[in-house]
Image 1: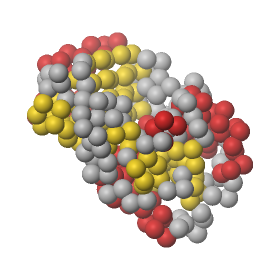
Image 2: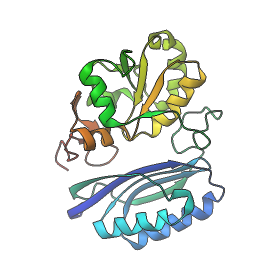
Image 3: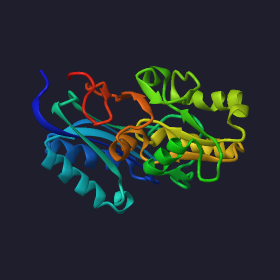
Image 4: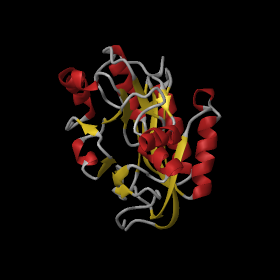
Length: 249
């Protein structure tokens, strides 16, 4: 039975060079366990990706500890609350990538593609074009089963079964992006960091990533122009624009 109470759920990632992956894994595991946190933390030489939940004070203490490391001082954290703890255990793993794309030439820890803020994107979608008058194409970089739960109005999905399919899909659909301002988006922004860089490298003229992904967009705009709910990889399954579970946990 999952623990019931008021739990703080956080998701965060940071692309940054990490040379001490094994040591960082042990430190993260130790501090998360000390706070009774549950969830998943992925560490690679390109950065960190985490989904954790627990008592609010314990979560805040963990974030403060992680930010005390200069590499993660500006770690951006997205928060939501739930009555039940959405994770059953704590997993801290070292991986080849914190989000797998299999394109080692794409290095978001070294550079970042331009981003559009949620409120700016909402204004563009309200007016039907960006500030330069170009049509905006919303490109969903998530897996299709996630897209099926909810997406931006008129968004393009390339029917991905896994994110590592994105490079081949870009090659097949490259012409679809011509003449538009392409805004790539995903749940929390991590996939778009790589997708936007790959599109830039492929010569897409105008490409942006939605800063903070769908969850940040929900937080700052209330979900305007988004139909449905956002799938999340924990027991809550989906979150509505109020960042509360769309289904009971």
